[in-house]
Image 1 (tube, one colour):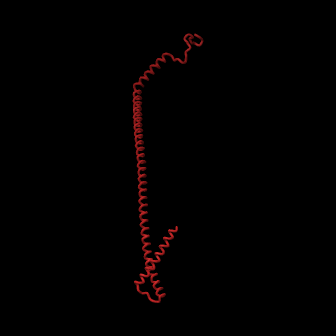
Image 2 (tube, rainbow, N blue to C red):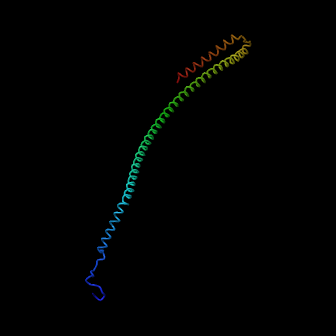
Image 3 (cartoon, rainbow, N blue to C red):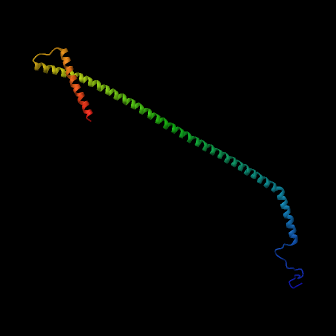
Length: 189
């Protein structure tokens, strides 16, 4: 023994990283008891919760995949309907253009027919007015000619039948002369 009362032979330098064997044995036994308790009581609950979560996640993934497939189908249907609607709109637009062109052609033909009727009616009216004016002019010219001839001859030419024949003969000669002048003028061109 030394002066301090410690036995030198009993004092073996001990490594602070290696615990004494009895503490190590007690620690290992306590660890296995706690581990066994946890494995028996908590591990089944943990596994159960993990399995439920895995099942829930798988279910949600399957549901998401089903929703995505349904969304793809709806999108494809929408695109098909949109394409059909575009084709239908194009067909309706084409029909409307064709109907419009047909209607315009019909309206033009009707307008042309009405214009020709109006022109024909106008020509007929002008011809009737010309004949009426020519008749009125014949009567006026005839009366003036009879009055003038009566003044020149100094007698009354009141015989209407004779007046009419004289006037008609005079006007026919004037018309024939005008027609022959017009024919000569056209031949000279």
